Length: 338
Image (tube, rainbow, N blue to C red; front, side):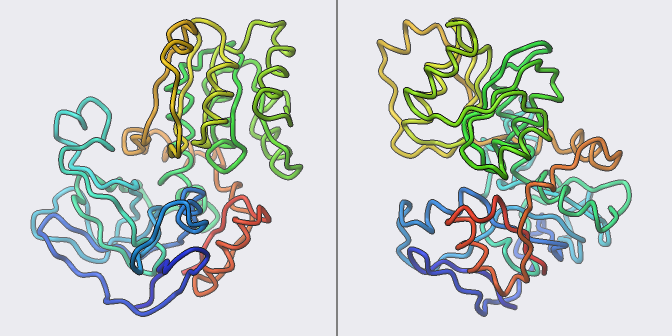
């Protein structure tokens, strides 16, 4: 089998590696129905996260179970399943409290840009659908594995309520699906911060009512102008930089909330400023597993179509071009045909 590896900055290769096999009795093997590239994959691609050896890539996945270990009970061969970027047992205290990405036995998934994938802790990690989805629903099912669930968590962590005014910092797939999530949670006004016309268009389709193109202090000023100097009730921070976090905190009204899901890079918060802001701050790696059953139902009923964030489709052997297109912002998110 071939799979995707990163060898260094902007060095992506689709090359031979061993077929996955059952290593523990709690494992499952799935045949992927599609693969994709995540915006967070661009951190190592750009050399911001250092790569010291060839490293497999890919943490978003859905597909058909082809083999299970002898202790797997909840997942059957032939089922269509979706999992999260962390494998979890879904039984430990952290999982029971809804934070499966902090599972006491978690394992990070990083080999999903390939035709087949070994999934540890299969009973806790994988969620089967009642029936196999039609082909046109597969992109949306794949989006649930990370970006839709992460956008949903950002909105939940930001305490989005019916009638709220919300801002979304970041116009990648997570930010755009954060817009959709805020809309589904009843937000009355959703301000999407974006400089890119195609992303602005999709943000509006997902429910954005306003577009702000400014960033940093200018972005904060513009948010305050739109809210008569008060700030918004909730901000979804979907980038992970110092600028985006400060923009999120300082755009929020006293007593409001920031939900942060951007993978943190160089972010620090001044204690005095934060103390006097009266802003609630919550986030981290999204516990996607918690949201999968409900989101799967919404996709199956065709209430949502998060697969629209995939605006480039390539054969998986052309995965390097998919990374390049996303790095150059020619694509929001690349779907890989396997």
